[in-house]
Amino acid sequence: MEIWKEFSFEAAHRLPNVPPEHKCARLHGHSYRVRLTVRGELDPQLGWVVDFDTIREAFEPVRAQLDHYYLNEIEGLSNPTSELLARWIWARTKPRLPQLARVEVMETCTSGARYEGA
Image (tube, rainbow, N blue to C red):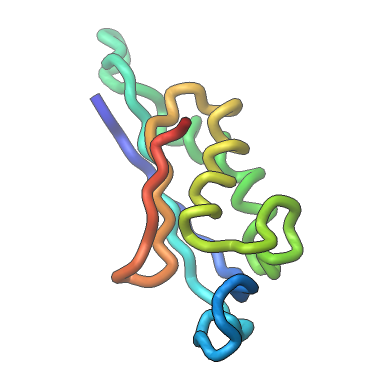
């Protein structure tokens, strides 16, 4: 069984490794959405995989590090693409949420990345 919980945060970034004329080389911001998917067996008594509040509690310290910050200044995010951001979130959330199966980062309503661990 898989369940998911979605979160949002606001942040600015720029992509330093693209050509200077690329629009993402300039400072800009996004209203990011993050979807955390958890996989596990259904608890026969409770009828759930994990409490949704457990997912929120595991992710909140990570979300707080990102919300209303300049991502390029955060350790490990000097080139904050959606792909690298998803991997960064995974590394910080998985120890707090062992059932984590997938991290999805959407930087716009039509663009995003999915990471399923390594």
